[in-house]
Length: 132
Image: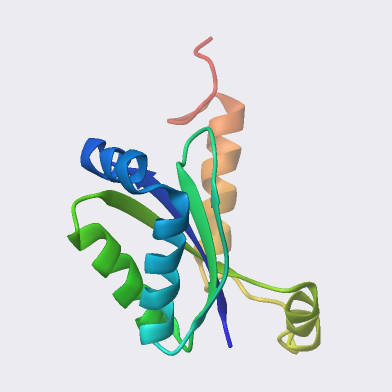
């Protein structure tokens, strides 16, 4: 099952809720929300810095992750950023899926790029070269 990282920034109202109810209640609510989408809460941590909390969850698909993110944002208590997490083993897979040939620059574009770089470097035309 895909794994997602939800980085959460509380609004003023969301922060008041955490202060009132505590962190363990937030974990229970998060766990219930993830499980309702067919997933499993792996971790919830509160943190300092750019985000106030992070959640790591296994969810069936991207639509489930989007639904969770929208549900959180819809409360008005927090804003979320969702990141797909990739295991080291999953990062090994793209190596085996390399295209058989090198990507090509579309025909004619090489000449245009060369001309632009040549003109920019020579001071003979428009570009980045300093005027003499």
